[in-house]
Image (cartoon, rainbow, N blue to C red; front, side, top):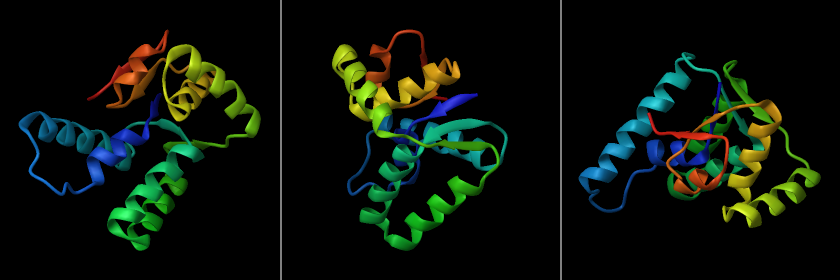
Length: 140
């Protein structure tokens, strides 16, 4: 099982406002393939309500409420996607981790949940995950 970071959804779903470079197109294609496997139920993944909210807000801003709600509904009902609850105490610990490893608070929150569940791999295109010890960032 891998943690599924919001960056994968954003690369897969967002339509660019400009022409993408070959490298950016390759990232977008890899993100689509990850999402495809997850949507088809071929892989079990974990994420948090915070990461779902991150994606939902950005999708809503760029593509409208209807698409955002459809995505959230799919994430919450798919049996191979586990969406973890997060409490204020989790954010307190994540803040300490974020400062220690120089990553965003939500990356640190993902890391905390990965440590709690003994998950060693994260699907992400966010290179800040490389700052976190004991896990491997996977882009395919």
